[in-house]
Image 1 (cartoon, one colour):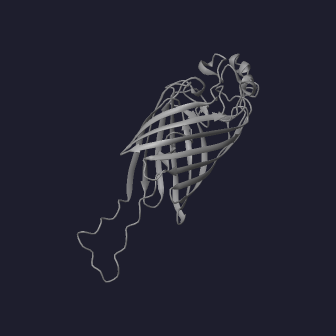
Image 2 (cartoon, helix red, strand yellow):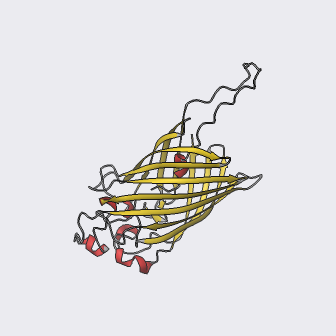
Image 3 (cartoon, rainbow, N blue to C red):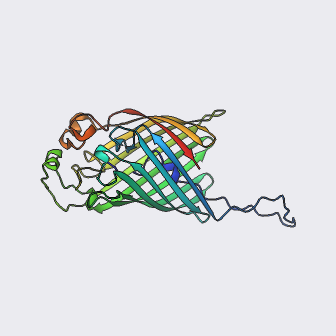
Amino acid sequence: MKFPHAVVAVAVFALPVAARAQSTPAGTAATAADPSPPPALTVSGAVAMASDYRFRGVSQSDQRMAVQGGITVAHQSGLYAGTWASNLAGWGTFGGANMELDLIGGYKTTLADHATLDVGLTWYMYPGGADKTDFAEPYAKLSGTAGPATLTAGVAYAPKQQAIGKWYNTGADAANAVYNHPGAKDDNLYLWGDGALALAGTPITAKAHIGHSWGQDGLGPNATAVAPTGSYWDWSLGADATYRNLTFGVSYVDTDISDRAASYLRPSFSKGQDGTGNIAGGTVVVSLTAAF
């Protein structure tokens, strides 16, 4: 389903705050050679192509290629705002433009040497899609660096909303338009950890991710769910190679959602929504990102 923050382009929305201008030592006059103070606002972004759009381990593009992009404006105070978009298909589709458009706002600050806190909110939108599709999800991320290694722990909690409520008990009910709990609201909790290790002397960074979702164990008003099966793990292992502003990434992505565990969600939870295939099964995702 289309529910994002997670992931190929999450880095676009976790941009570092502009560094403070260095002060001139006492008694020393500034010269023309001194660096100019950093701008109050910085604008950054990226566009990417990926072999599959996986959100928390589940395909949002029907296991097909996705084109994605985002842009962020950051203020030297730590405040930032941005947007990110991707095409959708299959389980990830709400109709309309078949597109996810995320609006993101937050605040990032340094807590101590090599430690940062990032808090904000993502508003998931589906332009032209069916009713009751958009929802909000606040998040917090704590990151720390030690030499070439970076570790991040995060939490995202979406309070009760109709878009992530359990309206259908099963995929069969959804296919037959039989609402079991019309108007129901539910919440969703996602905890995750990321690790990255830059390999000395190379342009390669190894990366790892693990996350756990808790939410409704049925289907929402548009026959999708933020947490299919109600509770599940997702993980990935991979590496990025960067050359100038280009990054080539490859990752193995998987979940513990088995065919048997997801059978009651079909036909919605399947490739082409035809009742076959596991869109949360293990796969290799390849991506190419250009930053600007």
